[in-house]
Image (cartoon, rainbow, N blue to C red; front, side, top):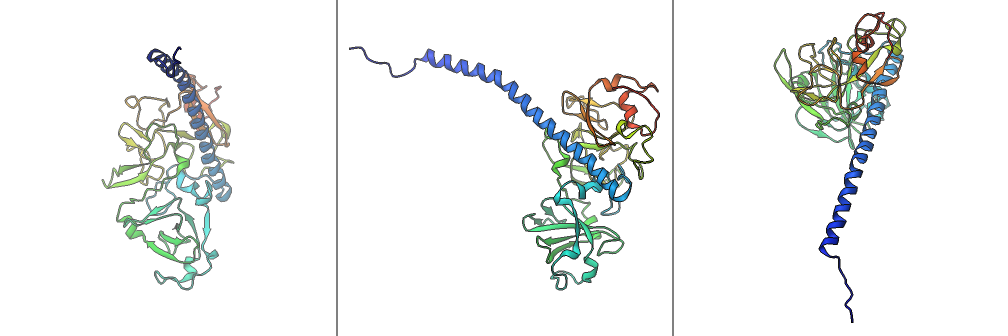
Amino acid sequence: MRRLRSAFTLIELLVVIAIIGVLVGLLLPAVQKVREAAARTRCINQCKQIVLAGHSYHDSKTYFPASISGTTAFGAERTYFHGILPFIDQANVSLDGSSSSSLTDLPYGSWNPKMIAQSGYKLPGDYTSPSGTLYSSKKYQAVLYMPPSSPWGSSSGILVWTSDFTQYVDKISPAKYEAVSENTAVVVKTFLCPSDKVTTTTASFTSPGTKTSSTLSVTNYVTNPIALQGKATLAASFGDGASNTILVAERYRTCQTTSVSWGWPTFDKTDKQGPAFDSGVEFQIAPSAAACVAGAPQTPHSNGMVVGFADGAVRTLTASANSNSSSLKVSVFQAMLTPRGGESFTE
């Protein structure tokens, strides 16, 4: 009687493994393309949130927040991104302290309750105090108070409240906060593009003036310092048209040895660490780490640079925007940076 075979032969197993390997090789590029498409869609949506948050700020104050305000005062809106924090998600909405159920018996400090019953800004996520105490967002909420709505009067500071806002458990005064060179890195996911190969969310920054080091959160989105100078308004500042003027572009979180922070307080054109980009340079499309130019806009997406315009639209610029010329013999990209340059162009 013939014995029935109950197992594969070695050759059959090798053939099956080879077939599986071929299938994986065929499917992997497709999976990677789908993953990158999803990441790019997320980056586009986040860029739009950042631009529209600027419009919400404009609706509230009648002007856009400045790209870099130039002030180093604690708690001031030093960058565009500081200004839009209350407008990008529920964790950052304005807080009216008067909504607290009890401000008459605070266990920490002895300030007049009427002084604390003022508006502030919720800081997103968990908060780590300058002394190193971690306050989980599940139980606590850190609130930034700025003049004139500040318990410190003309200065700013942070109070850490219980989640129900019935009492505060820690206070970070301006002197205490500045003493540690602002080593509080608040990571805002809306400011991070998932396509960036650098996955770290914080980096070390050194002030060019004081040489002090700080750990700050990084960003993939930066603002156009030409269009967002001073108090730019939709009515008066965009003579070339809001639909032709870029407000927001992309940058690598870290290029060469230079990282970019959305909250960098002492940014200037030489240190390249602030949430803006150098004028007069063209953008880069998916450059390698060695080819990356610090201070220039660069995108991790191989099909083009994601940019947000002053009218709220978000578009993708291909490499041709760097080479095509406008009526004034500058590139289309450079023409899009000037709000009142008088250039005419076609993409």
